Length: 358
Image 1 (tube, rainbow, N blue to C red):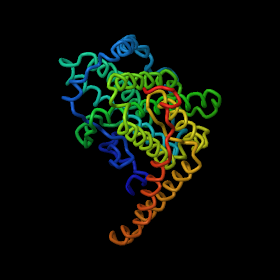
Image 2 (cartoon, helix red, strand yellow):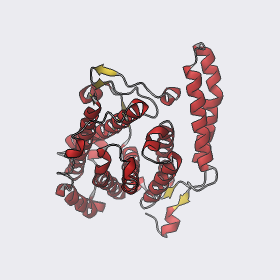
Image 3 (cartoon, helix red, strand yellow):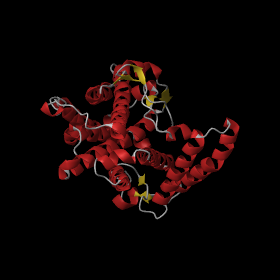
């Protein structure tokens, strides 16, 4: 975990081309899955909703949205020093995450085309959206005289295998949290234009609607596969993935408070708003959600943040590796303890609130 806590230096593969950030527990990951299991899935239980979503995807509301305008026709040298580094890192991480989604969705569409055409089309149309997002972000990096070598990224990243139901949980939450992050930034900058340091944020209102539709697609897929949303195992996995995404976002962003402060946010307030709204969105489909209002929830996250800072300090020291490891052990143990405490906070039972089993 310690490597994930260091702010990685932006390294160039060749002049103007970034080497992708070192993979850590907190960096955007690339996924693969069991294509055979996915191909055999019967979507007929919720085919009407899925077909309606296909109509929205085909309408392609954002087909003319990702076009750079005159706001980009100027120098951005006023964003310099640490601020420039933070902007490039934001663009690089965002581009990597979008490109990861593109690769997964594209491969799924290709593998399912002949055997599960409804799912295949959904994934194909989502891969179209993700490719636009990644390309737009990569083009934005050129304003800072940088780009990300996506071909190198495809070959160099390790792929994490997730069973289909885990793909559904993780991508549903990721798409919804992406929506709330983007719309929160957009609305904030709409009210505080003095913090609008770079024009890409003007595109976030329409952009986040892609994220929202993608989340709705996975919502509909899970409803077509009732085992993903019913029974004890599903309740445990829903808690696990919600908590994993929330913790990852919180730890990542607390390392980058400078970026959010540049936009005029108090980072902790931003985190709470995004987590709370994503959690409520998840409650519309998941049988349980995290009790983020529990008095121990955010204090445990803060302990993890503090542990990470201490681990980074130890990692950066000149002490011998065995001594570093021994010094890190108490902080590793503390973080594991806090994560277990978070997981065992009594969840909110959405089935009881809705008065029915989803």
